[in-house]
Length: 116
Length: 110
Image (cartoon, rainbow over all chains, first blue to last red; front, side, top):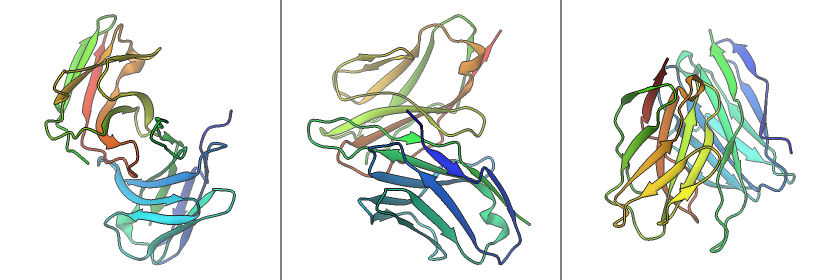
């Protein structure tokens, strides 16, 4: 079974540009999470999508946005890139939980974004 | 979601058991304890999770105290490839995001 896949793996953009990162969840998973990990820092929660809707959002400016498609894949968009947006962007997916079903999130290998 | 406290770093000799502690004194009844690890800027890897009973899988064992206020992740025979940052997270199974703290940086030494 394929894991969570993210594309591209590496990306270099210029300050002020826009970028779109993509995530394909594990088959059967309906939730997608996005995290940002700047160099030497911890994982910061960005966005959570489930069943096509945004369920929760971290403390990031509105220029960070995304969406989830009917096939549960997801995009993260970042507008007006700033130097401090340089980071590893990680996507995770999870099955829908129920009272009797324990679920865990599985992560992709991330997209390394460098803003110059 | 409850907050967790972990030591920032630990060393372990190769072949010995690595015991990584985590305090979660404000955990509530419906919150699970999850452990992930991250090896040098790769995506975090799920290790194990539990509610109140001890759990074991092919990677590790999770020991949760009776009052559930703390837990220990045990890697029974640590190898050099287990060198990573280990994150302890508590979360409702119905909840959404995983909130990562600073974790414990485990160094396995020959």
